[in-house]
Every structure is written in structure tokens, then in C-alpha cells.
Length: 217
Image (cartoon, rainbow, N blue to C red; front, side, top):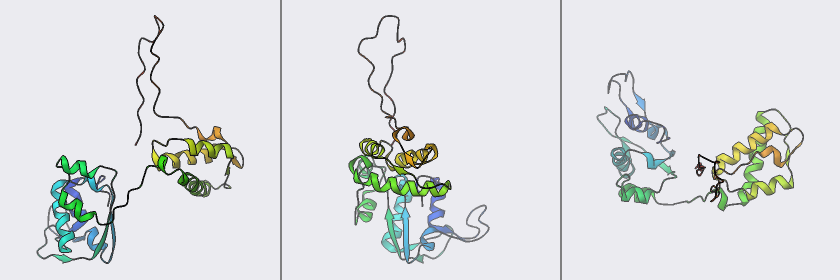
């Protein structure tokens, strides 16, 4: 369940389901993701984006191991393993009253912090090879190889866009390379953070001063 992509007023019924006639348009019963994931695993992606009122209902489901469908009369028992992911600072969210502390500590059983790609340089090789295979197959062409110079550039890049940026770079390179090797020119790498403008600008030039670029996260 992508908690950021679904409007908060629909997320409750998406997770917990609803009964026929619970609201206008509910023409039949719908099972929520918790019931569908019974005896399995449910991934709550971007948990930090969930509305705080819905967080209280989620906490109850986790504690009681049962869900209440919207418009339902009896709770439904569920046995679900929950994996929650976020790129937000939940501790800051607790301080700002946008995330419940009791839900945080209930979910925080086995925390796994994944560092940004720039801090795990060795993964660049593995991910690059994976994306090479993926996009070569998708485009129906032989898998090209990365030259030593190309691989050195990939390892040295700061990857402000993380793994998604690397994937886009490799996909573009697969499309642009003309032979069986990907050379540095095929990468089209560019730093998204621009340098500061020069301190002195000659008179009559540069009426509009350059600002800093935007960094994608």
C-alpha cells in the first residue's frame, strides 16, 4: 500500500475494506489489504505520509490483530507481518505532532536503515549490471558492457537522485550506445547542484545573477 499515493479519505477503506452500503457507491463488500494479506506480509510504503487520525486506527489493528471494515458490525481477525518504509524523519514527525510516537515504537521492532547510494559505493556495480540486463531485454538488444572508464564515472558520481537516478542513467545509456560497449559519453551524467556564480561580474554583463540548482531526492 502506497500511503503517499492514496488520498487519506480513501486509504482507510483501502487498508481495512468496507461493507456493502457503507457509503454511496459501495455496491458490494470489499476486502481491505489487511484481510488480503492474512497469513502473509503487508508493505506500508511511505508510512510517514499517513494521516495522523488513520495512524490511530492502524495502531489498534496492530495491537488487537483485527480489523473493522468501514460499515461493518464485527471485527475480523487478521495475522499479518508488517513492513513499513519511509524516507521521512519520523522522529522529527513525532516532535512536529505529525506522527504518533506510540505507532512509531510499535512498528520499530527491527529497524533497517538503508544509506543513500553515495554511501554504499559497492552497490553501484551490482545495480548497474542488474539495470543493464533489465533494459537490454526490454529493448530487445544484446547486453552491452560497461567500459572501465564508464564504471569509474559511475562509482565517482554523487547520485543525488539515488537508485532511481542510476536506473535512468543506465536505461538512457542502453538506448544511446551504438555498439557492444557503453562509453562515458553515453551516460550523459551531469551534476544537479550548480556551482556558485563568480564573485566579480564585468560591468554590463550578467544582469541576472545565477542561482543554485535544485537537488532531486
